[in-house]
Amino acid sequence: MAEPEITIPEQELVERFVRSTGPGGQNVNKVATAVELRFDIAQSPSLPEAVRERLLTKRDRRVTLEGVLVISAQRFRTQERNREDARVRLAAFVESGLHVPKPRIATKPSRAAKERRIGAKKERGVTKRNRAQRDWD
Image (cartoon, rainbow, N blue to C red):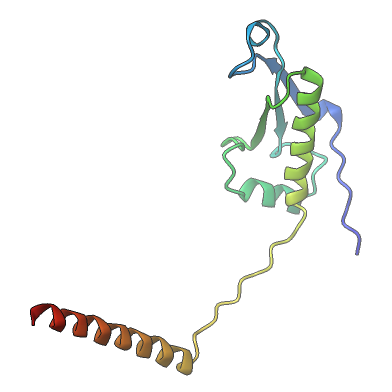
């Protein structure tokens, strides 16, 4: 089964250009090359409900309490490359919501595994006990 293709229209994205931080000489003080891309996951009509729920339940620090994804891109020196980078990262984030996580099945260790574990612990205890007795001699 092919995965559904999600297209986010341009009007759902809010871009703001800000000055980059870090080294860069005079250029960094004059030119707003960093991009802050905002995408409202909670209110987006282009996301299927299941994908929206998965994205909002992710514990990602880029998602605000209101359900807005904020991506800050300042890896490159040009505004255009940073815009591209922000959009690639947005696509990767949305794509991560397409995959349904496999439910975890709780298991119990077998009796043999429990016995092996206890045996190893007892063996270790004997080793330590013998070591302590040697120190007193």
